[in-house]
Length: 469
Image 1 (cartoon, rainbow, N blue to C red):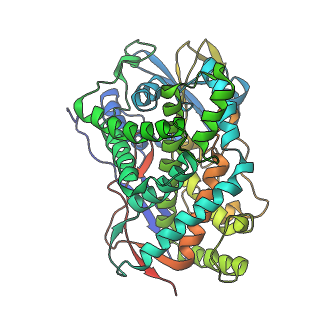
Image 2 (image 1 turned 45 degrees about the vertical axis):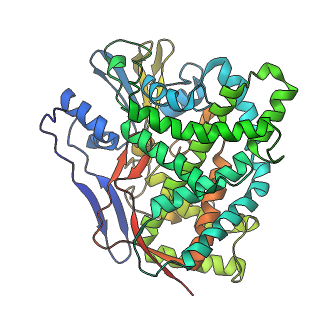
């Protein structure tokens, strides 16, 4: 690949005795030339935004003739994601093409009648009223990780991103699939998706050259193998459920029962697999990344860690935290919400205009790309106090962000159906593990946030762990 003089941007990180500004790529002083922008976008989508984009604004540019609109103010976000939702409900051709091979017509990338038919079904299955039931599974799986970590040698480095991925994959497996996947099957899914994400091209050249649906992704042997690893696991579980081997409370069994009662839903084996795969990938990947970033932030802010641990002791009296404790764990929730502000799992929410529109004072072409960018919105210097600092206290008590300025789960009709599930899982897992262990980023490791489909630390997150008591 031509580099066009590509140079990795500097990664900024600052800390003092009572403040921490976590890792972020330095913003270029101005918009990049086209060739440099394309190369940077393919390597890391966080590196393409100039300094002027880190404030609430609406702007437009053209890439090879295609209009791209940056939607980066609370008012414009509300317009695109809520007021004119039906005109901007379609995910971008880049996202659809990038994920269609893996997820088919799953809820995350579907639209129109398919989305309208399935959204209420999936939303009901992961509704907040079901979270207490699923919470017991979260407790049990995290307790198993505590037992395993207690037998690990103190101070031995390990990749906490992989550990959190295995934890959340097992939780989602037991709640979605109703039985233990086991470490081998869970790792097949984890490694299959990690490989898929590394191979997929997040810049669809065909779209910018005039193909409104973008060009199909080239399905080479390595990409096919990564998808096969995921699909083999999911299809086996779906087939077991259809054969009557599933558990009654699992999400997949609920989908199977709904289909039997209402055949018009059209949930055949392929559709069931797509929805199960969507719930699994969204539920495991985003929470694993959030917990990984939370460990990094707490590792560098011991004054916050002290508040979290003290709160857990107050609430639990020394026993292991449970799902019933979550509403009282205000510091744990604030840490997770601040983590989601600084490192939103999906940092770019791209939408395609169905028809001509007007956002603010900008006329929008049919099929134009509207970019709602939580990475920028959450760090806008006119919306947040000290936006680059890790300050969980901004989410404590009655303090809430300006409406439509904080959207880690998207917002409007397409807000993440599993938001309450993911928040509860993140808070509970963090509380159970931090009560017992002190996590520190391995000495000398330089954290580098990178985004292709989701936001991860480049190369994982090596840490060391010691027991608290």
